Image 1 (cartoon, rainbow, N blue to C red):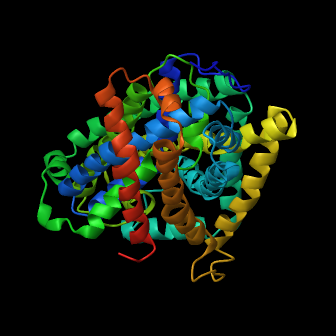
Image 2: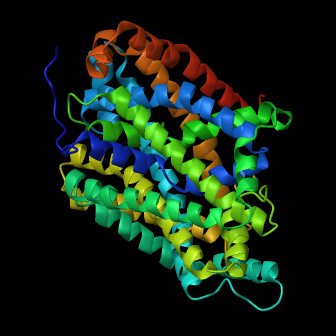
Length: 455
């Protein structure tokens, strides 16, 4: 047994704290905003079953690998990969995999913060009764949304507010900031979701929503749907962006990585399913389209909230839920960059947060302006926002996840992974090793071929 290293940034106080933090990293806008609309676009129940299968075969093995690598290295993803490669006698250029994760998280947060700012703004729009308008509610909500994103000053304000909230948490450190935040955010998020599900049960279309979610019609599944489910299972668990690796570096020795990864994946999946259970009955009760795409949250649901009894209360609760989900993820997206700055540039955590936060905020202005004054400026036929979204979700994350699986399964010393995982039985370890060596990378590679247009 090699000597146990400790992270200079601190450690989670318990396994439960890590579960909350890793779940918070995984649970985000993707669960509550993206999962319902891609389920709607891909036919409902059969898509959900394929998604659950992909979480089990792709997401969980890679999450175990990334957490294990983080705890083994006890540093930022960049320095962890350099150390692990050196220990395995491999080329130290593997540290570029750490760089890939840090840069990907940085790029995601730059536009994620802007969308999260929309959610904060919509909390106040709901409270003020802005969803209630005269005449055609569809036209009213469309004008409300178009006017909002067309105002660069409004978007800059809400983007700035969200980034300040993120930095205020991260600057306080592992236990004082990250852990305290998730101990409040995650129980609150689950409570709000359950309230929304409770309301959906009284909407008059609850059974219709359940049937859509859980009554599979496999005639609606094709190759594209399977690959979409595979990709979302991977992305929703925050894999390949350094977040889970850096959170794993704060995990105390003796805590079972395999068990906690199953719990985190289960909690993340539960949030996505609960979001669908809460949203689809409201959609059907108001004769809205479940396949309305990305506008389901900001342009479609406000129509329902503006028409339903108690819509002001439940609309406000829903967008508070979105803000909590976004904040629990944003703090994990910036943490890898902050950890690296502290380790490599001998600066305080406060200064590292300021530098990382300021650079993220500045890059986020490109996303802000891509919705208004720079909407006609395009690179590779995409706006800045669309380009960043495509680059990270469709290219960088699959590449990062693929190489995490390859490193854990083929490069890292078996002795080291066995020591960290402590699964307890050879068959269990061998099953994980088989999945991470063959099944997970092959599946991620198929996703990558799909998004680059080969399949």
